[in-house]
Image (cartoon, rainbow, N blue to C red):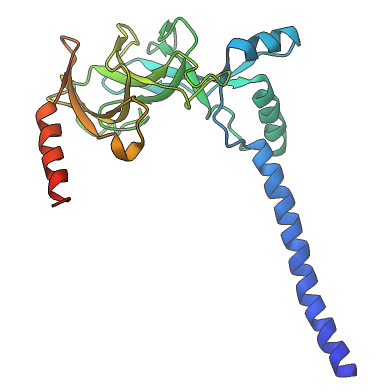
Length: 260
């Protein structure tokens, strides 16, 4: 009996600490999810905005990091993010608990352009929008560059994925809504729409940055497996988008061979 009690005590001495550690981890993990919400950060619009006004809530907060140098330009950009009133409150709580928390990694709503002396030279947009991506040719949002590399002086444009409408009608304008592809010059001027009613998968600047090769799917309500990937070519100087139908035709023929 004494041996059994000793074994039981040893087991309890192992199991109970493990249980306590697991409980503490689960508690703080759930708290962490509250501080770092998985939902996309948003601009409240429509009924949500009207309700916030009626309730006298703080509507929106903005956040931003340091200006970033633009490739092949002396200009810089300052990407401005937005938080809803609740998200701003959660971010403030999180920041007080974690010194390295950065509240600016949220939904971009506008871009402020600066000259080499850090003087504002203009904004990208003049109305509410969600900017899901800002990118230079062939890369995601990376504006830093190696000063020892030779500068590609053909680089003249910045690309963006921008949404202006709450297309899923959830009262928020964010990355969950439809975004179209746009480009501007290196000072944020001459913003032009590249695609419309297309879900852009990927895009590349080609031909010495004179054209954009775009992979996309039509927004047609079809299930993804029945909605074929398509290709297009956008000429920057003329603003003309050309669907590359012959590529799509050949790909359909290849797919048909799989059923034989």
